[in-house]
Image (cartoon, rainbow, N blue to C red):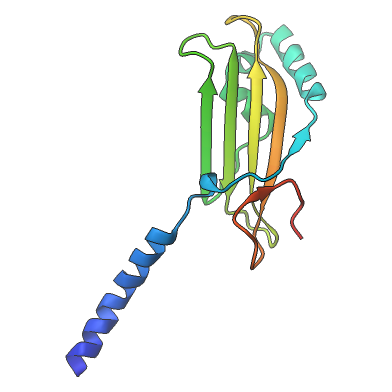
Length: 150
């Protein structure tokens, strides 16, 4: 009987961790059911001013979104960049998912940036920024929504 108890105590953590790994769903797989459109006018003025001053970040889409909003240190961060073509793209979509905020209500955020430029030598312009929240309170669905978390 003692051997059975010892075996159970040794195997229980392994069984629990296997179950958790199978049930774990990455936050970038959660659905986005609604989102807010953020204003881009002021930021595009900043891009134009930086381009006129010869700043390099305006020519790199990831640097543009980082200039708009710093990517934070969270438990989970996913950045997916999609271009309209392989070399010298004119359109880019960048999705950023952060999860693991030390906040009682907001667990994470989702952003989707739509950028374009007139030519491969031109600076990027932000056409649209979408934002949604992932709530962290008990009983919250695992989905992103435009609603602020309670």
